[in-house]
Image 1: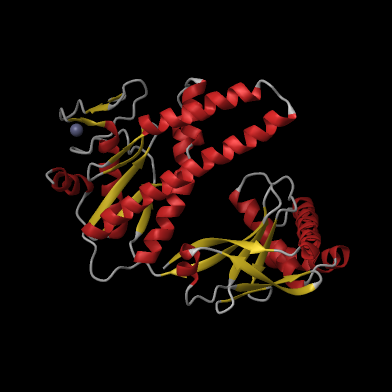
Image 2 (image 1 turned 135 degrees about the horizontal axis):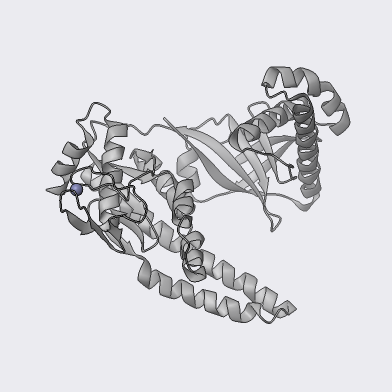
Length: 376
Ligand SMILES: [Zn+2]
């Protein structure tokens, strides 16, 4: 089973907007109050914190009982996830079975707000419909975007085990030179894409220097156009990845994405290069892959990114010494066994091998596995 969240846009009539906003700010207030108590008493246990804050917070905010329970969970959850939580903003609301329901026949959701239960129609496409089919989700998050739209992220559990055994794992390396490289040798070249994005960025820099009202409008339009381009391409890449996985009856393996940004940022780089790396939405690409994989029943696994680009895919030798990296631009050269290879492909082979050990823990050691795959 794999839990993914399905993002659905809500159709909100104008008169209900402020009802949502009122609940959102009540929820943020509650979180902030709970956080200050938790910090003051250094209490990070859900039950203990509940005893301390439930009554006073409910009275102060006027929230429903379950909203307060969710606020406590949110505070504890955030505290565990990040080192220092400062402040909660009124942009999201956690919902559970008592405050949320999904009605498949009418494509609506019931959400409990401060004023009571309210129904909203969903405006969603085929992806979301397919993912929500036959589901009775038990958790969701209501969100308000910067532009003032409302979305609900519905958590669903999807079976990922395909019928029969999955003998293969396609490793996918996401990087800066190429957007994606697979262990089966496919690449989505960053160059051509980069040309398009550089053009957007040049126009943007030009417009930005003007700082008038119309230039700000143009800037917004530009960035939306760039977003559409990115979305289109990510859809495209994810479709092709899924198709290949389906054909080979293989699973897909990726690195944890949060770390890609970090590891790429370790090296001091030019401003241009930094923009190029950080702007590409690998997160979006991964989400698309997860959606589509879930629909067709292809397992997606994530592997730790440590050393995937410094390990030799043939002999398994790890070259970690700083400055003595055997990755030289686009080439990877192993001084241990003499293996020379495309650097991205080398990384994707390592990701594939790691993915294999996640899916088949009983499989033989990593380097043996790789020998077999290289002879493909
Ligand atoms: Zn080697």
